[in-house]
Length: 170
Image (cartoon, rainbow, N blue to C red; front, side, top):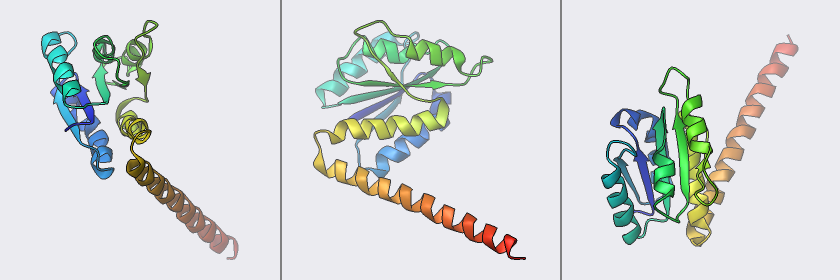
């Protein structure tokens, strides 16, 4: 049963969104990963939302470039949290997608993340935080991951400081 749905506006967006699914897998979160378009397949989009909600889906992650109306279209059809990942796939460098994703009318929010892979990863982390509100085991896994991030930064700092000290001593 998918707790998170990851929608992309085009199959060509898959490489940009794989980091999202990698984080979800790492955290042990069941997810659905598919392509649907706000413009080309609105009926499919609506049907997917209904089916996924009936199966227990709690969070929708939507990635799209250019006009990027997918997250807004999903928000219009659900009261579950919708996380938007704008993709920089146009000559405008993602500004068009960012503005289309972030500017929503009152009552139909989309929590908008960063562009591309960074946004994809953080969308998964944010979805996990939302789910962890009612899943203590997931909350503990998130805490453990944070400890790992801290340890990696501290190890990197120690390495840089040691290398600098060695250079200075010569």
